[in-house]
Length: 169
Image (tube, rainbow, N blue to C red; front, side, top):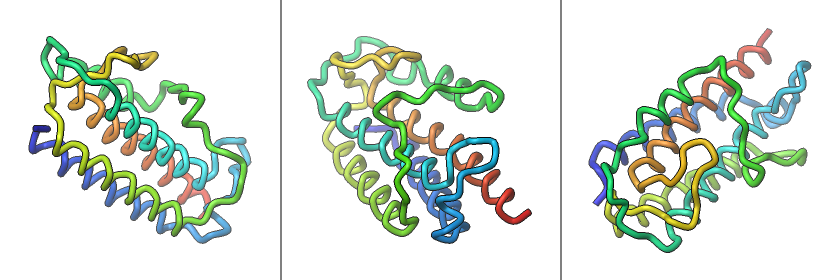
């Protein structure tokens, strides 16, 4: 079973994410900043697409990792904590230019996270998907993918908070 620390960490990051999304009106959620960065809607869609991708990865052919379940967690945390470094999003997690509804995207994120939670009850934390290696981190265990969700969410919440501050000014 997955460590008891992970589910509360994902829950907390999800609560913070939904709170950050709530700061935006439907209009401001889709406003592209002058610097050409992603809109808040695009940031939220990126998180949703990442969750969907990870959910699919977690359900592929799994095998025993043969290493510590959290061996790469500190590397993942460090990569996401370094706000100065630009992390390239994977192609299939890139948001569209279509308008997004903040309420609908919150519901979809909540649904996807719940699906991930249900799946985590059925696997061991040392399981690894041998079919996919993350371009930066390589093959990750269930534990590492879960912490990836947490750290990716936290980094993107900071982006949303920055955008929210820009909308107020």
